[in-house]
Amino acid sequence: MLSSRRRFLLGSGLTLVATQSTFAANFIVNGRVVSDPNISLQDPEFDKVGIQMTWQDDGGNLWVAPINPATGAIIPTSGQGTLIDTGLAPIADTKNGPEWDYSNGPTQIVYTKLINGTQVLGRALWTGSQWQAGLLAGGDDRSAPLASKYPQDGFINTSTIYHVGGVPTPRTPISFRDLDDATSEERVSDPTAIQGQWVQGQRTVICQILVNSVYQIATYNTLTGTLTQLTFDAGNKNNPYMWQAPEFNNELIFSALIDESSIAVYRLKRDKWSKIKTIAPGGTAKPYYNSPEPFIYGGKSYLSFTANQLSALNGKSPSDVWIAATDPANPLQRRVSDASAKTRSDPESLILTGGPVIYYVEITNTDLRILHRCTTGL
Image 1 (cartoon, rainbow, N blue to C red):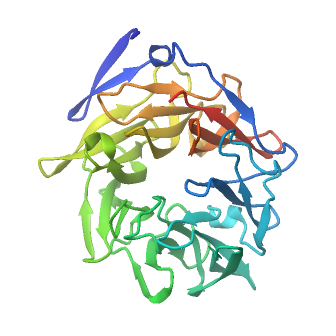
Image 2: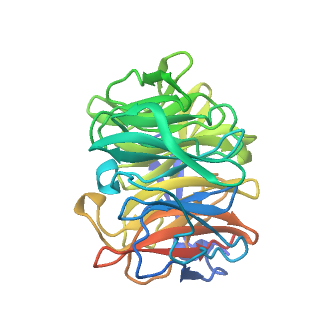
């Protein structure tokens, strides 16, 4: 039953913002620790096809661990299932751990190695019976690769986005290439372009560019070299994702974080990208948002994200994990983590046999990373 509603006029769209109690009357938070609390399990990434997890430990070792598809349990709880490679560059330097790369053939993992002090692009390939690790040709002095996040996305999933030259920062320009063709390497034409992600089903990068001292969202078509600015409204935008939304007949929509204060969803209307929804959960004393990432379940799109007590610029702070529907006609917003005061980060979705769950990392006072799994009620 719907309770109180608050409406705000933001930009050109009418936005519905609702309290946690509005949509959670029948939802009971159900979360648990799923990793060994004595092992720091940082920046895990989840394979939505093979139902498994990859991550790198503090010693630079690359691991893959299977996940129980019914319970979501990590096997083993240390996360140290199969050792794939060694000598990975520290995440403190690369700012990102290993990533799944979906392809028409075997699933792959892309990551950054450290060889004689130089960051190099690495790739592990599943042969059908074992993992085969190696280096990408022409991958020297390159780091933090990001491949397609969309399973069965055969159009662009053999490509990757990464940084060239030295240690990447949030302001390092982005380049891209086909995994098996070093000569295909190009850089996004705008030198201010950062934080790129592949657009589902296209050879297009969605990223942020600096326009009149404000970060806006743009796309770069890697086939034509065309850069197109998509947003023109106020607020610095980052963490963009663009995907095919089943609730809109598989039209492309995209989300972006705005000034850490809200998450906006945009849809193409009359040849113009317009904000159709702003997500900013009411009823929380944690007004800063981070790490929005889409997932699809039951023919609908959702975002998982964190609500934080302090800005990310201030470092660690108490935070909660939320999900929200992206369709303006679907008002669901729900806190899925418990109410305890924890620093939570990196929420990631995975569809189990009983429905979607969200994994997140708890950062302890001693900087251990402990993995949690919580249900979504979807």
